Length: 331
Image 1: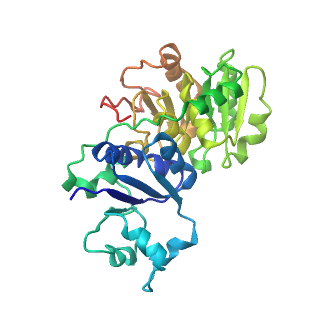
Image 2: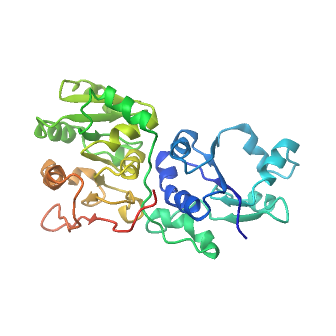
Image 3: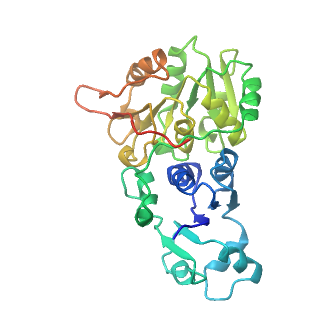
């Protein structure tokens, strides 16, 4: 079977979508002329539409998808549209087997269920498992390339100084955040380095203090549109932040990253790409000192696009992992 139209059902936030990106790139590379559409986080998936990897993105919060969960008939227009796909890849939760019973909708349609629970190392490999029969390669780093107009607009917002260091001091969970006073101390240590501090909807706990740092040296990107933020990060010297979707975004646009991990497992959830440094010292972010972080920033500052793999240590007794994926990229 050679699919000419593929529908991917994949929920979650920005990071959840971006760990799926290597699969989407592999599908586009394998079947360049296929129609590929995704139902999930619309704002995140639109990045792949702008990039040309997806033909269309659909918002998983729309009411129409509820029709799939149940035994009743689908509305005729909805059913006709679903039947137009020769391959349906389902990564939505399906605890009662409703989607498995619903698909395939025609004898010619193929339905593959990958499940929503991710335990594979790295996470992006999870999405390749249902497609082994198609001969897809192992996951490779996936690069997002957005239209040049976004880079132009980002440069204007950055006052034509795009080579800033990007800092993302928040996340959706306080347990995943480095203490705010240490971010402040690190920012002070980085002077006179020009910085771009990224704030989003999840950064309420740090927003007021970070906004107060705005200056000629420090610019604040507060809830910028996602494609514009991606373009701004893509031109940056490097990115420093937590285990978040923004860290995955920085990796996807090819920016060297230093990612601070605490309770989550980097072997599964670290961004998948080149020039990714992971710093972890136990399950508490408070175990990482400002000196630990500053020490691992230095080689990235000196060689922002040419970091080589090495082993890093946050203390004499507690190792952390510094990894570089050397695989070739899908572009």
